[in-house]
Image (cartoon, rainbow, N blue to C red; front, side):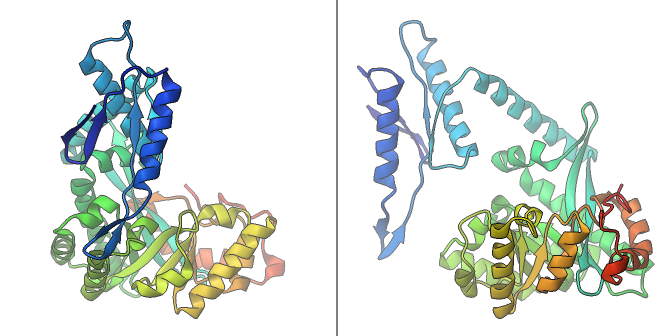
Length: 379
Protein backbone atom coordinates (compact mmCIF):
# COMPACT_ATOMS: atom_id res chain seq x y z
CA UNK A 1 0.00 0.00 0.00
CA UNK A 2 1.48 3.35 -1.03
CA UNK A 3 0.29 6.74 0.19
CA UNK A 4 1.43 10.30 -0.31
CA UNK A 5 1.69 12.00 3.08
CA UNK A 6 2.33 15.45 1.64
CA UNK A 7 4.89 17.37 -0.39
CA UNK A 8 7.52 14.95 -1.67
CA UNK A 9 7.03 12.38 1.12
CA UNK A 10 5.46 8.98 0.47
CA UNK A 11 4.91 5.98 2.70
CA UNK A 12 4.82 2.31 1.74
CA UNK A 13 3.17 -0.26 4.00
CA UNK A 14 4.68 -3.70 3.34
CA UNK A 15 2.74 -6.68 4.67
CA UNK A 16 3.76 -10.34 4.80
CA UNK A 17 7.47 -9.64 4.35
CA UNK A 18 10.29 -11.67 5.82
CA UNK A 19 11.95 -9.04 8.01
CA UNK A 20 14.47 -6.32 7.22
CA UNK A 21 16.00 -8.09 4.22
CA UNK A 22 12.82 -7.87 2.15
CA UNK A 23 12.30 -4.22 3.08
CA UNK A 24 15.85 -3.38 2.03
CA UNK A 25 15.36 -5.12 -1.34
CA UNK A 26 12.28 -2.99 -2.03
CA UNK A 27 14.06 0.19 -0.94
CA UNK A 28 16.89 -0.59 -3.36
CA UNK A 29 14.41 -1.25 -6.17
CA UNK A 30 12.77 2.14 -5.56
CA UNK A 31 16.15 3.86 -5.73
CA UNK A 32 17.02 2.04 -8.98
CA UNK A 33 13.77 3.08 -10.64
CA UNK A 34 14.19 6.74 -9.63
CA UNK A 35 17.81 6.69 -10.76
CA UNK A 36 16.65 7.04 -14.37
CA UNK A 37 15.92 10.58 -15.63
CA UNK A 38 12.42 11.90 -16.20
CA UNK A 39 11.85 13.77 -19.46
CA UNK A 40 9.84 16.93 -18.74
CA UNK A 41 9.31 19.50 -21.52
CA UNK A 42 12.25 18.01 -23.36
CA UNK A 43 14.60 18.29 -20.36
CA UNK A 44 16.15 15.48 -18.36
CA UNK A 45 15.24 15.80 -14.68
CA UNK A 46 16.87 13.63 -12.01
CA UNK A 47 15.41 12.77 -8.62
CA UNK A 48 17.06 11.21 -5.60
CA UNK A 49 15.28 9.29 -2.89
CA UNK A 50 15.97 8.91 0.82
CA UNK A 51 14.22 5.93 2.41
CA UNK A 52 13.63 5.29 6.09
CA UNK A 53 12.68 1.76 7.15
CA UNK A 54 10.95 0.78 10.41
CA UNK A 55 9.90 -2.81 11.15
CA UNK A 56 6.65 -3.50 13.04
CA UNK A 57 5.40 -6.71 14.62
CA UNK A 58 2.99 -7.79 17.31
CA UNK A 59 5.31 -6.44 20.00
CA UNK A 60 5.73 -3.05 18.28
CA UNK A 61 4.21 0.20 19.51
CA UNK A 62 1.31 1.90 17.75
CA UNK A 63 1.11 2.56 14.04
CA UNK A 64 1.81 6.25 14.73
CA UNK A 65 5.04 5.28 16.48
CA UNK A 66 6.11 3.04 13.59
CA UNK A 67 5.43 5.85 11.12
CA UNK A 68 7.40 8.30 13.25
CA UNK A 69 10.28 5.83 13.48
CA UNK A 70 10.34 5.45 9.69
CA UNK A 71 10.32 9.25 9.38
CA UNK A 72 13.33 9.57 11.72
CA UNK A 73 15.16 6.89 9.71
CA UNK A 74 14.40 8.80 6.51
CA UNK A 75 15.98 11.98 7.89
CA UNK A 76 18.95 9.91 9.00
CA UNK A 77 19.33 8.78 5.36
CA UNK A 78 19.11 12.39 4.17
CA UNK A 79 21.72 13.54 6.66
CA UNK A 80 24.04 10.75 5.52
CA UNK A 81 24.19 12.12 2.00
CA UNK A 82 20.80 11.43 0.44
CA UNK A 83 19.93 8.87 -2.22
CA UNK A 84 20.17 5.98 0.25
CA UNK A 85 18.17 4.11 2.88
CA UNK A 86 18.50 3.81 6.65
CA UNK A 87 17.03 1.37 9.17
CA UNK A 88 15.43 2.79 12.31
CA UNK A 89 17.51 2.33 15.45
CA UNK A 90 16.46 3.26 19.00
CA UNK A 91 19.34 5.73 19.20
CA UNK A 92 17.63 7.84 16.55
CA UNK A 93 15.06 8.89 19.16
CA UNK A 94 17.73 10.54 21.26
CA UNK A 95 19.31 12.19 18.18
CA UNK A 96 15.90 13.51 17.11
CA UNK A 97 15.38 14.93 20.60
CA UNK A 98 18.82 16.55 20.47
CA UNK A 99 18.02 18.15 17.09
CA UNK A 100 14.76 19.53 18.47
CA UNK A 101 16.53 20.87 21.57
CA UNK A 102 19.28 22.55 19.53
CA UNK A 103 16.74 24.05 17.13
CA UNK A 104 14.71 25.51 20.00
CA UNK A 105 17.82 26.94 21.66
CA UNK A 106 18.97 28.46 18.35
CA UNK A 107 15.64 30.22 17.89
CA UNK A 108 16.18 31.87 21.25
CA UNK A 109 19.93 32.34 20.86
CA UNK A 110 19.93 34.39 17.65
CA UNK A 111 17.95 37.36 19.03
CA UNK A 112 19.77 37.06 22.37
CA UNK A 113 23.12 37.68 20.71
CA UNK A 114 24.65 34.31 21.62
CA UNK A 115 26.35 33.96 18.24
CA UNK A 116 29.71 35.44 17.34
CA UNK A 117 31.65 35.88 14.10
CA UNK A 118 35.24 34.63 14.01
CA UNK A 119 37.64 35.56 11.22
CA UNK A 120 40.35 33.45 9.59
CA UNK A 121 42.93 35.46 7.64
CA UNK A 122 43.65 34.77 3.96
CA UNK A 123 47.11 35.60 2.60
CA UNK A 124 48.53 36.21 -0.85
CA UNK A 125 50.95 33.28 -1.01
CA UNK A 126 53.25 35.03 -3.48
CA UNK A 127 53.68 38.36 -1.66
CA UNK A 128 52.74 37.54 1.93
CA UNK A 129 50.13 40.32 2.04
CA UNK A 130 47.02 39.84 4.16
CA UNK A 131 44.27 40.13 1.53
CA UNK A 132 41.08 39.05 3.26
CA UNK A 133 39.27 37.11 5.94
CA UNK A 134 36.73 34.29 5.95
CA UNK A 135 33.81 34.87 8.32
CA UNK A 136 32.97 31.82 10.44
CA UNK A 137 30.11 31.71 12.93
CA UNK A 138 30.48 30.37 16.48
CA UNK A 139 27.78 29.84 19.09
CA UNK A 140 28.58 31.02 22.62
CA UNK A 141 26.03 28.73 24.25
CA UNK A 142 25.14 29.88 27.79
CA UNK A 143 25.44 26.33 29.18
CA UNK A 144 27.68 24.38 26.79
CA UNK A 145 30.21 27.07 25.96
CA UNK A 146 31.54 27.76 22.46
CA UNK A 147 30.13 25.43 19.80
CA UNK A 148 31.78 24.90 16.41
CA UNK A 149 29.66 25.09 13.23
CA UNK A 150 29.54 21.31 12.78
CA UNK A 151 27.51 21.14 15.98
CA UNK A 152 24.65 23.33 14.77
CA UNK A 153 24.87 24.38 11.10
CA UNK A 154 23.22 21.23 9.69
CA UNK A 155 20.32 21.66 12.12
CA UNK A 156 20.07 25.33 11.14
CA UNK A 157 19.81 24.30 7.47
CA UNK A 158 17.19 21.62 8.14
CA UNK A 159 15.05 23.96 10.23
CA UNK A 160 15.39 27.05 8.01
CA UNK A 161 17.16 28.98 10.79
CA UNK A 162 20.16 29.32 8.48
CA UNK A 163 18.32 32.23 6.81
CA UNK A 164 18.08 34.60 9.82
CA UNK A 165 21.49 33.41 11.04
CA UNK A 166 23.02 34.06 7.61
CA UNK A 167 21.51 37.54 7.46
CA UNK A 168 22.98 38.34 10.86
CA UNK A 169 26.45 37.06 9.87
CA UNK A 170 26.46 39.21 6.70
CA UNK A 171 25.51 42.37 8.64
CA UNK A 172 27.89 41.68 11.51
CA UNK A 173 30.88 40.79 9.33
CA UNK A 174 30.43 43.62 6.81
CA UNK A 175 30.04 46.12 9.66
CA UNK A 176 33.32 44.86 11.17
CA UNK A 177 35.16 44.96 7.84
CA UNK A 178 33.99 48.53 7.28
CA UNK A 179 35.33 49.46 10.74
CA UNK A 180 38.70 47.89 9.90
CA UNK A 181 38.78 49.85 6.64
CA UNK A 182 38.48 53.08 8.59
CA UNK A 183 40.98 51.98 11.24
CA UNK A 184 43.58 50.82 8.70
CA UNK A 185 42.83 53.38 6.00
CA UNK A 186 46.45 53.35 4.80
CA UNK A 187 46.18 49.70 3.67
CA UNK A 188 44.41 47.93 0.84
CA UNK A 189 40.86 47.04 2.01
CA UNK A 190 40.41 43.40 3.02
CA UNK A 191 38.07 41.08 1.13
CA UNK A 192 35.30 39.36 3.08
CA UNK A 193 34.55 35.72 2.28
CA UNK A 194 31.14 34.40 3.30
CA UNK A 195 29.86 30.83 3.08
CA UNK A 196 26.53 30.49 1.29
CA UNK A 197 24.42 27.41 2.06
CA UNK A 198 22.03 25.88 -0.45
CA UNK A 199 19.06 27.12 1.64
CA UNK A 200 20.34 30.70 1.43
CA UNK A 201 21.11 30.34 -2.26
CA UNK A 202 17.59 29.10 -3.04
CA UNK A 203 15.94 31.92 -1.10
CA UNK A 204 14.03 34.13 -3.58
CA UNK A 205 15.11 37.35 -1.83
CA UNK A 206 18.78 36.44 -1.50
CA UNK A 207 20.14 39.18 -3.73
CA UNK A 208 17.81 41.89 -2.42
CA UNK A 209 18.67 41.06 1.19
CA UNK A 210 22.39 40.91 0.42
CA UNK A 211 22.25 44.29 -1.31
CA UNK A 212 20.30 45.91 1.54
CA UNK A 213 22.68 44.51 4.17
CA UNK A 214 25.74 45.84 2.36
CA UNK A 215 24.12 49.23 1.80
CA UNK A 216 23.17 49.53 5.48
CA UNK A 217 26.73 48.74 6.57
CA UNK A 218 28.31 50.86 3.78
CA UNK A 219 30.41 47.91 2.65
CA UNK A 220 31.55 47.71 -0.96
CA UNK A 221 29.99 44.60 -2.64
CA UNK A 222 33.05 44.28 -4.89
CA UNK A 223 35.00 43.27 -1.75
CA UNK A 224 32.66 40.33 -1.06
CA UNK A 225 33.45 36.73 -2.03
CA UNK A 226 30.57 34.29 -1.69
CA UNK A 227 31.71 30.71 -1.22
CA UNK A 228 29.26 28.22 -2.71
CA UNK A 229 29.19 24.44 -2.64
CA UNK A 230 29.76 22.18 -5.62
CA UNK A 231 26.13 21.03 -5.54
CA UNK A 232 25.00 24.64 -6.08
CA UNK A 233 27.47 25.38 -8.87
CA UNK A 234 26.88 22.10 -10.69
CA UNK A 235 23.09 22.44 -10.78
CA UNK A 236 22.76 22.71 -14.54
CA UNK A 237 19.55 24.73 -14.68
CA UNK A 238 18.70 28.12 -16.17
CA UNK A 239 17.67 29.40 -12.72
CA UNK A 240 21.06 28.52 -11.24
CA UNK A 241 22.93 30.28 -14.03
CA UNK A 242 20.64 33.30 -13.73
CA UNK A 243 21.16 33.56 -9.96
CA UNK A 244 24.93 33.22 -10.26
CA UNK A 245 25.00 35.90 -12.94
CA UNK A 246 22.81 38.24 -10.89
CA UNK A 247 25.21 37.86 -7.98
CA UNK A 248 28.06 38.74 -10.33
CA UNK A 249 26.10 41.79 -11.53
CA UNK A 250 25.88 43.01 -7.93
CA UNK A 251 29.68 43.02 -7.96
CA UNK A 252 30.52 40.09 -5.69
CA UNK A 253 33.04 37.39 -6.58
CA UNK A 254 32.16 33.69 -6.43
CA UNK A 255 34.38 30.95 -5.01
CA UNK A 256 33.83 27.20 -5.25
CA UNK A 257 34.44 25.84 -1.76
CA UNK A 258 36.06 22.50 -0.80
CA UNK A 259 36.91 21.71 -4.41
CA UNK A 260 37.67 18.07 -5.10
CA UNK A 261 35.47 16.49 -2.44
CA UNK A 262 32.36 16.22 -4.62
CA UNK A 263 31.58 15.55 -8.25
CA UNK A 264 32.76 18.72 -9.97
CA UNK A 265 34.92 18.81 -13.09
CA UNK A 266 37.19 21.71 -13.99
CA UNK A 267 36.09 21.63 -17.62
CA UNK A 268 32.50 22.01 -16.44
CA UNK A 269 33.33 25.21 -14.58
CA UNK A 270 33.81 27.12 -17.83
CA UNK A 271 30.03 27.45 -17.99
CA UNK A 272 29.75 29.20 -14.63
CA UNK A 273 30.92 32.67 -13.52
CA UNK A 274 33.27 31.34 -10.84
CA UNK A 275 36.28 33.49 -9.89
CA UNK A 276 38.12 31.33 -7.38
CA UNK A 277 38.66 27.65 -6.58
CA UNK A 278 39.26 26.67 -2.95
CA UNK A 279 41.18 23.39 -2.79
CA UNK A 280 39.98 21.26 0.10
CA UNK A 281 42.38 20.86 3.02
CA UNK A 282 42.33 17.06 2.69
CA UNK A 283 44.44 17.43 -0.48
CA UNK A 284 46.71 20.07 1.04
CA UNK A 285 47.43 17.73 3.98
CA UNK A 286 48.98 15.18 1.60
CA UNK A 287 50.95 17.72 -0.39
CA UNK A 288 54.59 16.71 -0.78
CA UNK A 289 54.35 13.20 0.68
CA UNK A 290 51.26 11.73 -1.01
CA UNK A 291 51.87 11.49 -4.76
CA UNK A 292 48.18 11.35 -5.65
CA UNK A 293 47.26 14.42 -3.59
CA UNK A 294 50.26 16.30 -4.97
CA UNK A 295 49.28 15.44 -8.56
CA UNK A 296 45.69 16.52 -7.93
CA UNK A 297 46.77 19.88 -6.53
CA UNK A 298 49.14 20.42 -9.47
CA UNK A 299 46.39 19.55 -11.98
CA UNK A 300 43.80 21.80 -10.32
CA UNK A 301 46.30 24.64 -10.18
CA UNK A 302 47.27 24.35 -13.84
CA UNK A 303 43.72 23.98 -15.15
CA UNK A 304 42.36 26.79 -12.96
CA UNK A 305 45.01 29.24 -14.13
CA UNK A 306 44.38 28.22 -17.74
CA UNK A 307 40.75 29.28 -17.21
CA UNK A 308 41.83 32.56 -15.57
CA UNK A 309 40.63 31.43 -12.12
CA UNK A 310 42.51 32.18 -8.92
CA UNK A 311 43.17 29.38 -6.43
CA UNK A 312 42.99 29.38 -2.63
CA UNK A 313 44.50 26.54 -0.60
CA UNK A 314 42.68 25.65 2.62
CA UNK A 315 44.20 24.09 5.70
CA UNK A 316 47.88 25.06 5.32
CA UNK A 317 49.64 23.81 8.44
CA UNK A 318 53.35 23.47 7.60
CA UNK A 319 56.06 25.55 5.95
CA UNK A 320 56.67 22.65 3.56
CA UNK A 321 53.10 22.93 2.27
CA UNK A 322 53.49 26.69 1.94
CA UNK A 323 56.72 26.33 -0.06
CA UNK A 324 55.21 23.78 -2.45
CA UNK A 325 52.10 25.89 -2.99
CA UNK A 326 54.26 28.91 -3.75
CA UNK A 327 56.25 26.87 -6.29
CA UNK A 328 53.01 25.74 -7.94
CA UNK A 329 51.83 29.35 -8.23
CA UNK A 330 48.93 29.12 -5.80
CA UNK A 331 47.38 32.56 -5.35
CA UNK A 332 45.97 32.57 -1.82
CA UNK A 333 45.99 30.44 1.30
CA UNK A 334 44.68 30.08 4.81
CA UNK A 335 45.34 27.67 7.66
CA UNK A 336 46.67 27.13 11.16
CA UNK A 337 50.23 27.84 10.00
CA UNK A 338 49.21 31.49 9.91
CA UNK A 339 46.33 31.64 12.37
CA UNK A 340 43.32 29.87 13.80
CA UNK A 341 39.97 31.70 13.35
CA UNK A 342 39.98 34.71 15.68
CA UNK A 343 37.35 36.91 17.34
CA UNK A 344 37.16 40.46 15.99
CA UNK A 345 39.40 42.09 18.63
CA UNK A 346 42.25 39.61 18.13
CA UNK A 347 41.78 39.69 14.36
CA UNK A 348 42.25 43.45 14.52
CA UNK A 349 45.54 42.89 16.33
CA UNK A 350 46.66 40.42 13.67
CA UNK A 351 45.83 42.93 10.92
CA UNK A 352 48.06 45.39 12.73
CA UNK A 353 50.83 42.75 12.96
CA UNK A 354 50.45 41.44 9.41
CA UNK A 355 53.81 42.86 8.24
CA UNK A 356 55.44 40.68 10.92
CA UNK A 357 53.61 37.66 9.54
CA UNK A 358 55.02 38.40 6.11
CA UNK A 359 58.54 38.68 7.49
CA UNK A 360 58.21 35.33 9.29
CA UNK A 361 56.92 33.20 6.42
CA UNK A 362 57.98 35.08 3.27
CA UNK A 363 61.76 35.10 3.53
CA UNK A 364 64.53 33.10 1.83
CA UNK A 365 63.87 29.37 2.12
CA UNK A 366 67.14 28.75 3.99
CA UNK A 367 65.94 31.03 6.81
CA UNK A 368 62.54 29.39 7.27
CA UNK A 369 61.79 27.29 10.33
CA UNK A 370 61.47 23.77 8.87
CA UNK A 371 59.23 22.69 11.73
CA UNK A 372 56.60 25.20 10.68
CA UNK A 373 55.62 26.43 14.15
CA UNK A 374 51.88 26.67 13.70
CA UNK A 375 51.38 28.40 17.08
CA UNK A 376 53.50 31.42 16.17
CA UNK A 377 50.54 33.77 15.92
CA UNK A 378 47.62 31.45 16.62
CA UNK A 379 45.13 31.91 19.39
